[in-house]
Image (cartoon, rainbow, N blue to C red; front, side, top):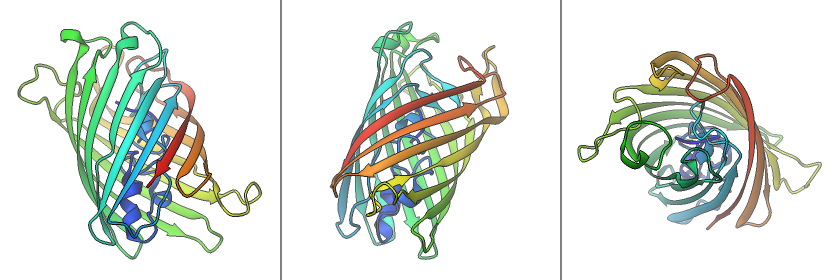
Length: 303
């Protein structure tokens, strides 16, 4: 489960290997972005600025706060936000190919049923190939480990989830320095690992995330282009992925959401981001209001 998402969360880092880390141009790809408001993994997209693409290995780290834990249209821990850490090493296999492992660890901020003890560790592995034309193709696997997840009929609220994804996108930089990007990511749930008795997501279900975004330098604030506005929007589709208030898995248009982040690249290494986001859903999703907003911030570094 994740917030403003993060598959949304270091494809950016992955795209980066193509010429000047395409992190900025891919920030809306839920598996390929470094902004805590940029991915299908909502909460899990910490800020990770673009670094020089010449090193064979790069590393993005960030500390993040989100006032809600929004993941694929669902308010996972209603009534509390989350604190999370992202540690994302990237191997630049070639100038156009990257392999990223954006580890993500989160804890609930305050008590909400048993949410005060909620913890989560995600282990994704994402591959991305970027073409010189601006298109990219990728695939990935993600292991989710949930500890003390509220609700459900499982010992200690623990759970495991296995997921694969495929993604494609396109980015273009205009003469005025503005970058436009789009992406389409499809997630498929494999079910529960054999040694576990409970899987958190319906096996065989899937989720589709089309997104559009931009990176706009705010030169009226900093003439060097170090402050950017990175809006993005998604209209997501659920295929028996999320359950409604009655516990029935539903299909159709899952939710529409947008994120409005602003990032300041303070130095070549350090950056900060603040954002506001909004989501609307009409499937009566479990534990989630039809219309809600949330906010967050991140402090990140790239090496």
